[in-house]
Amino acid sequence: MTDCLFCRMLNKEIPADVVYEDDDVLAFNDINPQAPVHVLIIPRIHIATLNDLQAKHAEVMGKLLLAAKEVAKQKGLSEGGYRTVINCNADAGQMVFHIHLHLLGGRQMDWPPG
Ligand code: AMP
Ligand code: ZN
Image (cartoon, rainbow, N blue to C red; front, top):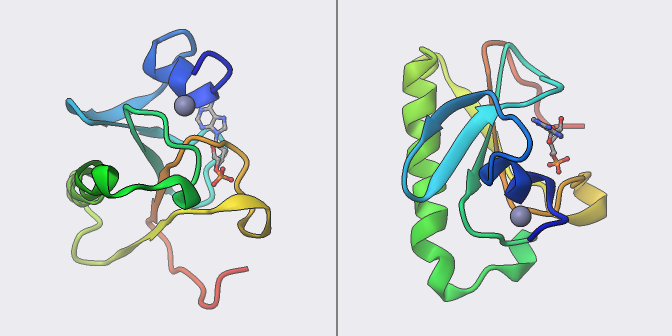
């Protein structure tokens, strides 16, 4: 989608600080990090929100989680731990409507989240 920020990053129209990529996903540092490690992992296909997921997206959503595991390992977070988050719509604070997994780590996380 031409008016989607993350699609434009996938198309290299907007720079991304890439930490991992494969045929299905792209992972890059969040521009406004909320933890020492804050990486966003996105599918190469445009899906707006969790509400828009269909059965055909099951594999690519699994790939997001596999990429999270890889990035966590790369960042040295696997043993100590980390958090993954997908915000959906306004009450969760979703700002970019191209589905993305936040990978947060490098500090103690609070629960419940704010
Ligand atoms: P969400 O609130 O779940 O939609 O998360 C959107 C995230 O995208 C926020 O954490 C923003 O800091 C991040 N973000 C917005 N623009 C950029 C950008 N150009 N590069 C990297 N991260 C961005
Ligand atoms: Zn998009």
